[in-house]
Length: 458
Image (cartoon, rainbow, N blue to C red):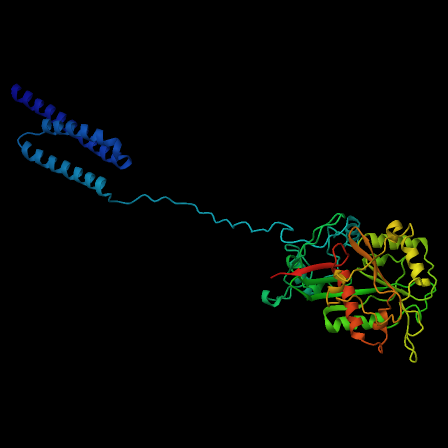
């Protein structure tokens, strides 16, 4: 009885030990599978070692059916190994994808180097100060009180000043509806005066007509390949002085007729700038060309007028002065002393130029304008020099000029060319009017002048 009891106890102890070993083996197998999910390379070695422990444990815990158990175990190991090898060699399963963050950045604008394309005519420092003084004042911080602009003004301001907020409503015009002049800046010969470069009208997105608002007296666009293909606008300034008789010292209609001819035969919108001005008027500083005539008047020019005239000529101004004679219906210009040197107006004007307050010693350096000079070829060709019909039987055959630093500042004429402009009955009148156009075009386009001149781009 006792022996049977001991046998039972032994069997129970062996059975408990086997159960314990089986539980440990199953737990180890489960742990290996979990580790495989987390990291397959970590559990390879543990799996191989654990396989041996598992075989031993199962072998120790089983009796009678070890062959079946061995076959089942080896089959399980083979299946696991096959899945692992296939996955490793052929890469089945989900591929790892990396999410890339793509940031789209707008490329920077392609900017052209400022003032790199071409240059404007040379402008002295004094002229630049003068132009800067005419610039509009800076806008205040709060512009809500400023009157709003029109729709066209809004478009224009927004084109020229991108990013600037304007108070006017936009017109909604399409890009193709806005026409701008294709221009670049002209490069002129060097002079001793300091120069200032300026932007082209194309970069300002403006048409030359848009600038004809009174601020500029002349803006021209010149084609370097065709001297007659020139367009823009020009305001003529006529000078008056004390004791000048408009019926003897001026041709009342000369400038008006010349401006009309220029409008009709060129693309320049030429006109007279208001009434006549005196030398003392500061507005002559804006005029690219001034015009003065005389006959037998006495020039009574004050020191203020002399100083102002001198400053004007030294800083890009151009003066055309002429001794004139008017014809009569019966004898024409016979006996009028037209084209004669040394007349009272001739002597007075040249004395004025060499006055210390005007040009000083530079005002006495008169020279004849040679027939090869650009003045005679600026628009129409005058290979034989100036027209002589207004000075029959005279002893003067050339124009005279004063140069300042290589720029023609004054042209003086005893040849009565204004007679062609002011007398509708003048012989060969059109030729004289053509010469007047030449004179104006040269004055406006020569280097260092006040006029704003650009060139067509190809």
